[in-house]
Image 1 (cartoon, rainbow, N blue to C red):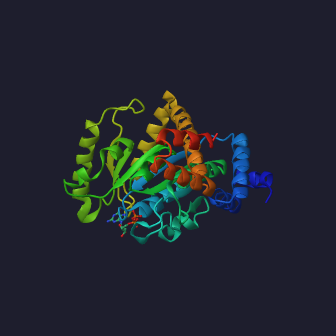
Image 2 (cartoon, protein in one colour; image 1 turned 120 degrees about the vertical axis):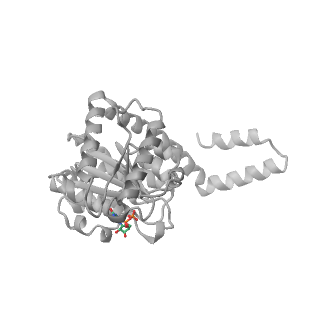
Image 3 (cartoon, helix red, strand yellow; image 1 turned 90 degrees about the vertical axis):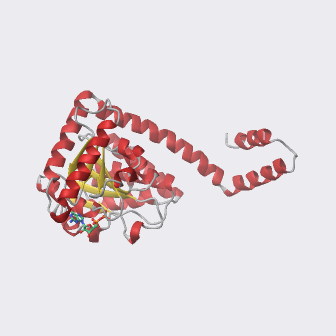
Length: 325
Ligand code: GDP
C-alpha cells in the first residue's frame, strides 16, 4: 500500500492498516524500514489529536497481567474509551511459555470493537524491541486510541524500556509474605507510579491488604519525586478476577495524569523521552554498523594485530572508529 494512503487509513482508525503498519515497523528489511520511517513521519505531522495516555504494566508471570488487562481494558471500553494493548517481550525464551499480549488470554477484550491487541513478535534483541515497541505505540496513538497499555514481564531491562515509553508505570504484584518485599528491586519500585497488589479476593484478600500496606510503607521511604503530588507513588489492592479496585485505580491514574498535565510534567517527560530515544537510536545505529560483516572482519584483523604487539589498542581503536565516520 502506498504510504500516504496507509497513513490516511490509520488516522481514520482502520485496524487492518494499523496491523500492517505495525508489521512494517517490526520488519528488519531495509526497504520496510524506509517505508516505516516515512509512514511515522507522515503520521506525526498530521496527528493533531490529544495525546493518548500510555500506561506501562509490569509484573512477573502468573501475577495476573492478562486477567488485569482484560478486566481493566473492558472497564475503559465501557466508559467509551478506545484501548490498545501492546507487549514488550525481549526474551526469545517466553516467560513461562506464555506469549505476552496473547489474545486467547484476553478473550472478551479481543472481541471488543474498541480494543486492539497486538501480541509481541517472536525473536528479537533488546535494541530492536525498544524501537519497534515505541513505533507501535506511536502508530496506535495516531490511530486514535485513548489509552495504550504496554505490557511487559518483570525482568531486567524491559521495565526501564517500557517506563521510558509510557506516561504512567504500573507494577502488578501478588499478595505475599513479608520477605517478598525484598524481592522487588529498589530500581523498579522507584520507577513505579503505582503498585497494584492483585488477587485481593477470597482467601488472599487479607494477605493482599497486608502486602499493600508493606509496599505503601516502602514507597513512603523513597524520595518524593517532583513529578508527583502528595500520596504518590501509591500502592492499592485490586482483584482482576472480581473486578474490584479497578475503578479506584483508574481514578488515581487520572488524578495523577491531570496533575502532571497541569504542572507541565507530562509534556516535559515526553520531551525527555524523545531526547532519550533519539540518543539510544544513534547509539544502537552505531553498534549495528559495527556488526556489519566487513566491520567485524576489520575488527578481527585489528584485534589480532593488537594481540601480536603490531599496534597499540589505542591506535587500533582510533583506526576502527575512523571507519565509522
Ligand atoms: P500473567 O501471567 O501475569 O498474565 O497472569 P494471568 O493473568 O495469566 O493469571 C495467572 C493466574 O492468576 C490465573 O490462574 C488467573 O486466573 C489468576 N488470577 C489473575 N488475577 C487474579 C485475581 O484477581 N484473583 C485471583 N484469585 N486470581 C487471579
